[in-house]
Structure formats: structure tokens, C-alpha cells
Image (cartoon, rainbow, N blue to C red; front, side):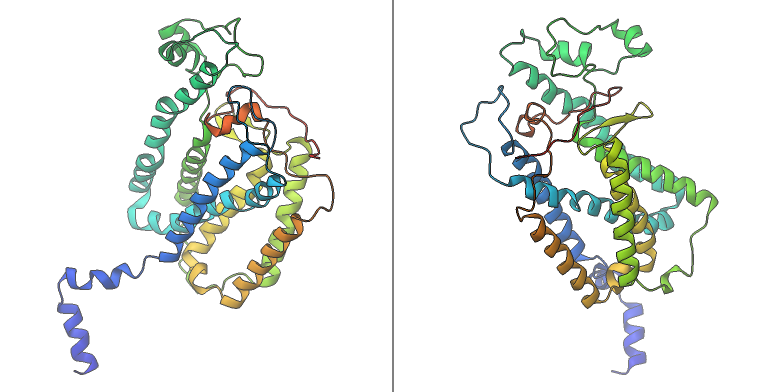
Length: 339
């Protein structure tokens, strides 16, 4: 069969026959990377319970794991940032295919609905369980917690549910008011980033010549690493790691990691149309992987007393409690050296 005849046969083939070829466009290694990152998320929050003394509400006999903080520190340096990079990487293509309205509608369905459901169906259960497991706290029904204490305080709460002053029995270690997004802050951030990206695209059209641009060089990658380290260092002077705030009153965020998350999302936006994941030279990628592994190994050496400082154990609850940030409150917790 000649090449021309083969081409005509492919063009005449039904859609079902060409579907396997189209499926090759999906990056299977990206799916595998997502699975690995999800496993790291579970491992990270599970291991946090074994870094300091166990909270009194959950008396576990297991002693803290020696040097577990090394894994937490190394993991926090990249795993959530990679999620933001992947989100940014595939956003331009989705926007180009669907247009602004359908793009935002899709993000609302994929991110907004799970955020709403999780905030009012999952996070309150965890917060209420935190009180229920405290022997020093009088019994509080889940319905009372959900309808009286958990909703955001404000005019709507006062109009529909009445005033809800801080109860006298409320534990001192528990922040008030208790409303928060828990670990669903990630969905909130992705939704905000999608809105900002759509707003930018409304004024700045897509760069049609971007696909011809080469992936970043060794020098560009090194420069980004230095700039990211400098920005993170400056921000952590005022906002140490694990200090969460309610930016603008409703954006649950940890400023110490925002330079990493925001910059990698933007880099993903640049990398997607240029297909950097597919065009990055293998040797260049392996070289920086080796650098990362080497730095992780260096971090495990006992070179000093300063180590990753996880949240106080009373806020961890073996991460059964999904939320640790009541909005409107700024957690002011100085960094400490871990022996």
C-alpha cells in the first residue's frame, strides 16, 4: 500500500478506529506523577502526627519517629508546587478549546462544587470531632456545632441564625470562629488562579508563536531556583512556615509557600503551550533530578539543630481534623528549633 493510499484510508476510517491514536496524546507519565503526588500528600499528613508529642485527645502509645521532620521538609519543598505546575500546564489548552465561559463553568464544576460540598459536609465533621474527643469539653451535638458555631460569622449569620458569641467552654487552644476550608484550600486557590487567568486572557490573547520556544536552559532553571529561595526567605521573615492567614478575609493561605505555588502555576501556564514536558531534553531533566535528590540527601545529614517545624500536635490530631484555620484569625507562631 502506498503512502497516499494509507493516508486516504486513515482519513476515511470511522472515529472509533482513530480513537486509539488520539488517546496517545494523553501524557500517561503525568497521570503516574499525579498518583505519586497524591501518595506523598497522604504520607506527609500521616507522618506529621509522629513528629512531636501526641495530642491528649488521641492517646497513642507510639513514640515520635526520629528525624521524620526531614521527610516533611523535603516533601514540602516540591510536592504541592508540582500540583500547581500541572494545573497551570493544562489550563491554556483547556481555555483555548472551551473559551472563557465554558472554561470557567468547567472549573466551577470541578473545583467550586467540591469546595462547597467539602467545606460544609466534611470539614465541620472533623472540627466537631475535635471537640467531641476532648474530655474537658462538655458535649456538643453535631447539629449545634454545624448550625450555630461553624458558619461564617457576619450579618447573614446574625439574620438567619442569630448571634453566636464564643462559648465559655470553648477550649483555649481552639481558635474562634471555627469556620475554615481545611485542606480544601488547594481547591480554593486553583479556582482563584483560574479566575485570574481567564481575566488576563480577556486582555492578552494567546501567544500563537509560543510553541516554537525551547524549554528553559540550565541557567534559567538555576536563576529561578535562586529567585524562589530569595523570595521565600524574605516572606518567611514575617510569615514563618505553618502560619496561616485569611488573606482579604476569605483566602485561606500559608504565605511561606505562596512564592512556590504561584510561580509554578505561572510557569505551568508558560510551559503548556510550549510543551516543555515533552520537549525538555532527558539529560537536562535528569541533571536537575540528581541535584534535587542530592540536596534532599544533604538535608538528612545532622548539620544543625534547625529543622522543619510542623504544626503543634494539638492541631494535627493525626490529621483527622481537616481544618486548622478559622478565617479572620492570623496564626502567630514563631519558628522554633527542633532538637
